[in-house]
Amino acid sequence: MAYLDHTSLSVSDFAAAKAFYAAALKPLGITVLMEFPKSVTGHVDVAGLGSDGKPFFWLAGAGKTTPRVHIAFGANSRAEVDAFYKAAIAAGGKDNGPPGIRAMYHPTYYGAFVLDADGHNIEAVCHKPE
Image 1 (cartoon, rainbow, N blue to C red):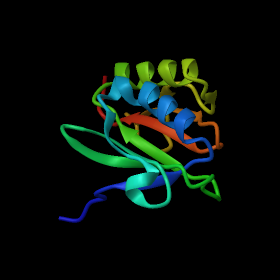
Image 2: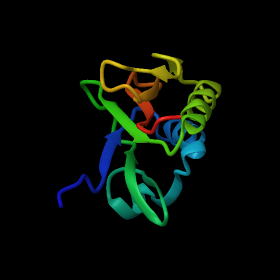
Image 3: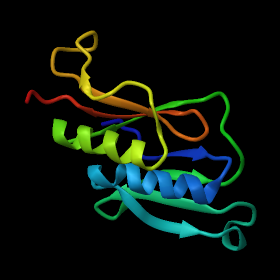
């Protein structure tokens, strides 16, 4: 079975991005699990966010990733999508599509979209019916 094991995003302000993602992803059960300072990596600070002891989303303070990217995080419920959106906006994210059904994808696609400080489109999505 093939799957995406992890991904990394380079950010312009590491400390601010780490704080934003920690707050925005907390409702999805995703937290900062590992951190390695520049003194360990040899060139940049990094942080691994994930769940169940496995980091799968890495941030690196190596400057803004260009072009901007879209990253979608799976949610277990529509309530989690709503909580992600609220937390992300409170943490400084900009609205890029409030929680709701996106029927063009499929009838139960429920997602919310925010832009982070570098302009990346960050989404939480639940595919389950209510």
